[in-house]
Length: 102
Ligand code: H2B
Image 1 (tube, rainbow, N blue to C red):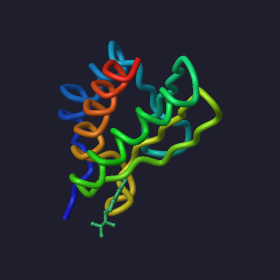
Image 2 (image 1 turned 45 degrees about the horizontal axis):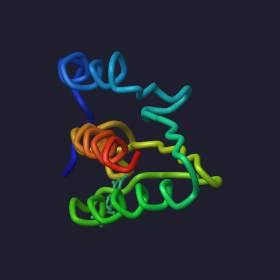
Image 3 (image 1 turned 135 degrees about the vertical axis):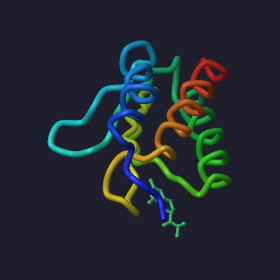
């Protein structure tokens, strides 16, 4: 069973993603979000394809919304109804994929 991040894990692992990784906490929900803007739809969709394949492999999936060159992503773990280490791992993969796709 996946567990919610402890307060220590939030300080050590989540805080850096917020302070330097471009992620933010979602209001009213234990989740994190980030918006990505690409040059065009093809680049945005290439990024989404890369993330989709990695997400499927780790069996942990983002909530996302795409309009043309913009992709808004929210991460949270449904199984524990909040942020878990899987969201941290996926956020790091997503940041990596965005720097490859841009
Ligand atoms: N993705 C996310 N974001 N949270 C989950 O709890 C989750 C998931 N659970 N992907 C997985 C799939 C689960 O439903 C399957 C059965 O392993």
